[in-house]
Length: 253
Image 1 (tube, one colour):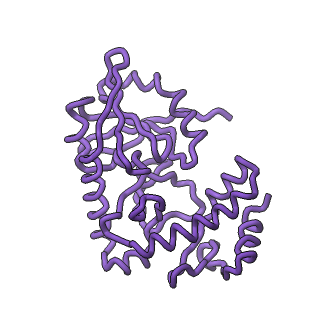
Image 2: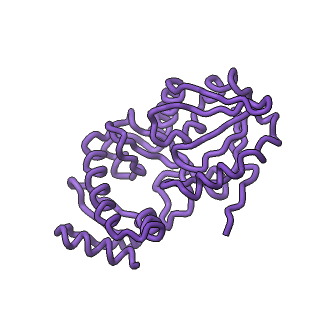
Image 3: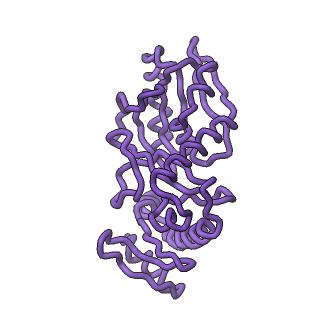
């Protein structure tokens, strides 16, 4: 199935004008007076996985509703850094590489929590923030959210395997919070190793138990393969001065 053709036909059916951005090659739509560039990577993946052409109409619904809502309630209090895979055809406007496969991307969450948008230059202009100011605010919001989260854990052969309970729909990104140590050290120890195979899944445990990573391979790969928003099968080492991938679980062909 030709994802681009199906997407364009759906836009034409709804009478939505579009053009192709000459620099990025992405579809450009005008929503609420703001120019939006659409990346079809997720739609292409969903079509290939499900074979359901109905997901094209649902994708357009989501784009229009979420973008309109995000523009209407744009707020600095809803800026965050998010862990995102770096295999998109077009990278985010504001990103910092974390590993060979993952970037830290500046995002905005709508007030109802339903829409997560990559922050654009236009959005920062509307907020009246510089890139540095927005990045600082994103870390502040992560710190607040992880402080409000509940840390839970399971004892597996003497190793505390921790995870976070929060309403944030992309909770894997709480691993980026600058105050993560204060929240998790008393439970699992510090520094930690962590996995984040998809946007809403994470595990962490004390780095001194490095061998424990072998117990998680099957879970991590399965979560990654089944996720709507996969991130990576990498294992991350996190301390106050370090965030790096130290290996990854192979994905079966």
